[in-house]
Image 1 (spheres, rainbow, N blue to C red):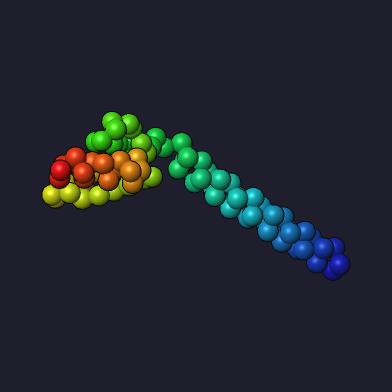
Image 2 (cartoon, helix red, strand yellow):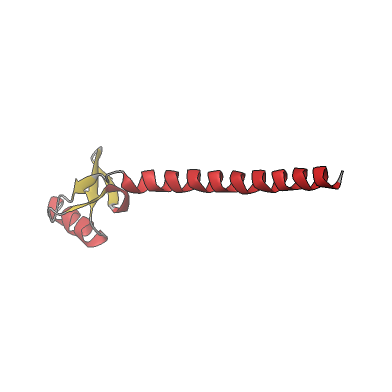
Length: 83
């Protein structure tokens, strides 16, 4: 009877370890797939540099979405547009 209980406990321990290993692999795969996706680049209309869309300063002007590398470029663009 003691052998059976020990066998069940070892089986349960094996199951828990395997469960966490598989769960950890799935999390790593998900992070890796996001990191390997190419990032969309947009061009700043003022200084003409390309920047990642997710980090750009966004501004809607006259119904059109513009992306800027920083707030200074946005300010200069607005000054140039409205002298």
